[in-house]
Amino acid sequence: RETLAKKPAFRSAFRKRCCLIPATGFYEWQQTPAGKQPHHIHRPDNSLFAFAGLWEHWERETESIYSCTIVTTAANPLMQPVHQRMSVIIAAQDYRSWLDKNTNQEDLHSILDRDGYRQLQLTPISTRVNNPAHNDPGILKAVSLAMDDMA
Image (cartoon, rainbow, N blue to C red; front, side):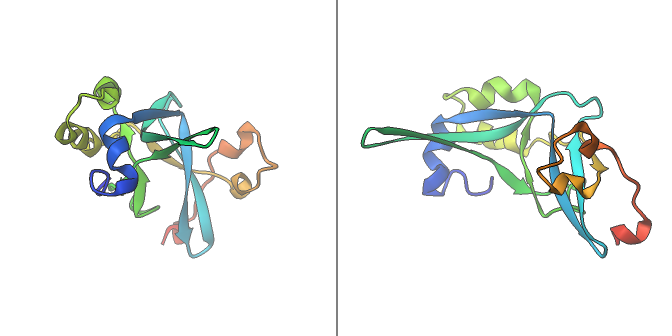
């Protein structure tokens, strides 16, 4: 987030090609004395939210290439115990402004500064999530953590 308007890789997309990347949750791993503990970050009701994204398009010979990225920023107090960076979540009331090509950069930065994490919770889950063969709702089941695991 801090370098979007400056870095050549993002500068043009930040001015003209903002997008929303929908999700109902995501995973982050916290380093603990017992190993890496996965967390499911989501709304209490598991409803949809959107990450701040940028997209790009290139033409190469006869090929069109599209790519996108999720904007990240320094972690807020909720995420700091788990990771030093976090993806930016856009509040629903800001979707239209984020997507509007005419929104000025100052307003875009203001949207990125809002804390879309206030409505989210971290749920410790089983390390089953680490294996792609486990593709079932059971991977989202909350687990209890011992206090020594969190130190």
